[in-house]
Image (cartoon, rainbow, N blue to C red; front, side):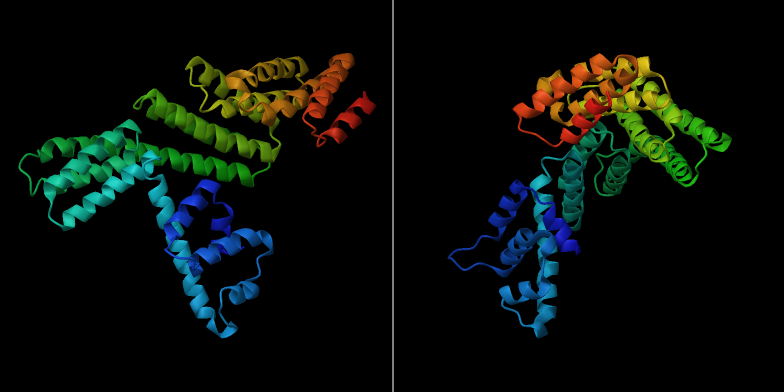
Length: 357
């Protein structure tokens, strides 16, 4: 699939509506860029370039014009999405302020530059975007050559302190990348891997001590997602069990779980239950299954449909060995709920397990 097809395939309805509004012109004549976008969207995986050429009014000898049109549409979509999300995404808003700094710096409007950099500094600190904060401090120090109200020594000290943290974060990224890469390549989890994980854990604790609770939460989430995916791919259920249980306990003790990351909590409980089952710890696996069953009811069942099957599967897997009658009860209640929703996707799962029991 070409780049433009991939981009258009992932556009939401709101994004398409916004882009079509940008393309809109007076009169009934449809622009070729808007026509190309809609043709690609409608054709999907069966996109035919030669057919599209004809629909756009190009001959086969005019492919260069067609390719220029494609490149323009890619650029227009990128520009449109950037505008659409600038005020919805704090990272994009921060980059927008930095872009305005460069524009006004070229116009020699230094007080305007300082206005935007001050706003950027406040936002960067709020969202803990430390690498972007370094760029903000660099811009303010540059402005000190033009504005006497700026004390470069004070901002120089802030920049040096921030750079120490940025350096530590980059070192953590290196550790995380090394651990993930090594675990993906090796089939055995040996002493060298454990040493890398210890180094990763120590570095994470060091950085967590210098940041806010929110940043520490995001840091631990990154580590959990990266390592968890590797252990699942390796079928390394012993290490997966240890990772999930320790991560879940940390998030619970720090009260980091909320509605925004509720899917992460449900994923942890699912992985814990499956890993424990694979490791032969059936009663402990059932404990996490019960926690999952309660958790999918929270926040008005926001992720109920996504995780109900995983809850039922854990109940059936464990109770098929501990309490077969209870396993049958869960299958029956699951079947009844699926029938109400006219969902027959899990029929094979239901019938095979019922027959086995």
